[in-house]
Image (tube, rainbow, N blue to C red; front, side, top):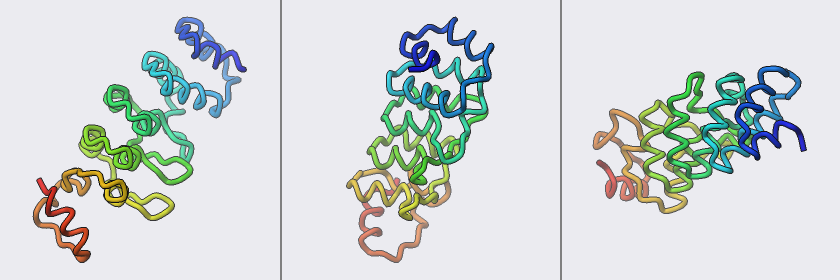
Length: 174
């Protein structure tokens, strides 16, 4: 196990700061693993420190980000905290093309869905299977207000072709 992971597991913030500042030897993969571990262990102060010292790792393409992992873990408090972080990419994807919004919709977490949409998440983004957040919500029979997944300006003026989708959305239009 690497020194970086030991420092994260022990939540040794001073030593972690020193290690990150002194050494550029940790690869982005190691740092991303450390952040994912901190998300899993719900250590927001560790995440804050890593992102402060190494902000570029929060936007690694196709690897996932702390925000994506927090949404995947249904961690509302951490999502709120990360939405305040600089260099945030709301629509960063993982290997499956999933974004934080797609994970939140799949996990049936309306509060996280609403926060992400308000932060500018792309409600029309599709994963590698071609599914949008609304598709994933429907798949899980998640009763989310359609306006939450359709973005601003859609509400009742939405035109629908699919009658099943129409019935679904009509029930939850806000």
